[in-house]
Image (cartoon, rainbow, N blue to C red; front, top):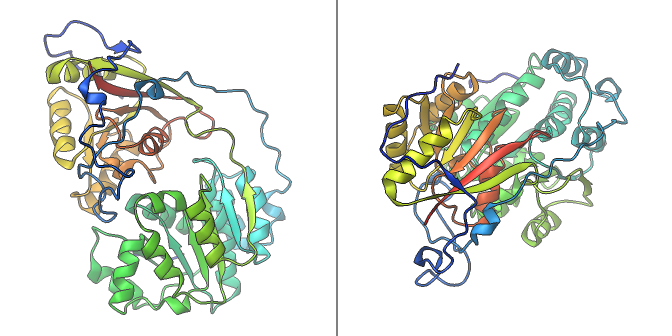
Length: 426
C-alpha cells in the first residue's frame, strides 16, 4: 500500500502530607452525587462528534462503588488456532509482510474471521480490544483489492487516532502491493486530502464526519466502493454518528461486502447491521468484560491543592509506567499538563483543539518513551493503541459509566493487568 500519508521521579511539591486515600467510604449524601438540576431523559447527545471531545456536558450519576473493583485476571490457556497464516489463501506479498511484522500465529478473531472474509461473506466481529481486529479485516481486504482491480475499500472509524492507526496497519500489511490510499480525518488539510483523492485511491480510511464532508463536496464517489469496514461501531454510535453512517452506507455500492467490528452488540447496532448487510456471519471471541483485567479504585481529596498533591503522589508511587490522565475540558487538560510539567514530569496533552500533527506527535512521544504521561479529554478514550499502559487516572469523573469503561479500556489490554484510579471529592 502506498500512503502519502527512563523515568526520574521528581521531588514532591505541596504541603499536604497525607498519602492518597483509596477506597474510603464515600459521603453518599454529598451534593456532588446528586442528579438534581441535571437534564432528564438519559445522557443526551453529548459533545459534537467532530469536536474530538473536551466540551462539558451533564454527567450521569455513577455510584462511587462502581469505580472500585479488584482485577479478575484468570489464567487462560493459549488460544490454539485452527489455521496458520500460511494456510490463508492470500497473496505471497501479504504473507511476506506478516512475517516481517513478526506475527507468528493468528489470534482468535483473525483465525475465525479471515477465512470468512476471503469467502466473500459479510462478517460481524465481536472481540475485546487489543486482540488484533485490524489484521482480521486488513489482510483479506488487501488480498481482495489485489485480486479484483475494480474493487475499492472504505473503512470508517470513530476517531482520528484510530483511523490513523488503521492506516499504518494497512500500510504494513500491504507494503509493496501497489495500493494507493487516502486518510480522511478532521484536523488535517482538506487540500491535501482532495489531492490524494484525485489519485483514485483503492483504500480510503476516515472518520464519518470528514468522509461526509468530502461526499458533500463531490470529491469522494461512494458508489465506487464495494468493500466496507466499520470499526468500533459501538463507539461511533455513542458519539452520535448513527445518522451520518446510515447516510453514507446508503450511498456505497449495493454490490458490496460489509464487515462490522464492535466490542458490544446493542439493539441500535443490530438494526444497522441488519439494514446494511446480507446474511452476515457473527464471530464472537469476546472473553469477559473490558474492565475485568483492570484493578480499579478511588482517590478521595479535599480541595484543589490536595487533589493535585495526591495525583503527584500517585505518579511517583513507583509502579506507574505509561499513564493516561483524563480531564473534562480542553482548558483543564492544558492547565493540568502545565502543572505536571512544572513539577518535573514528562507529559504531553491531546484534545480537540490540537491539530492532527500535534496529536500524532504526542502519541509518538508516548510510544517512544520520550514522555510517560499523556493528559487527554475523552478524545483518547477509544482508538489509541499504545502498548503497556499501566495506569488510567480519571482526574475528572466520566460523564457516564460507558465513558468510564472506554477510558479504562486503554489499560489491561491483551491479557495484561492494569490499574484505574478515579478522583472523587470528599
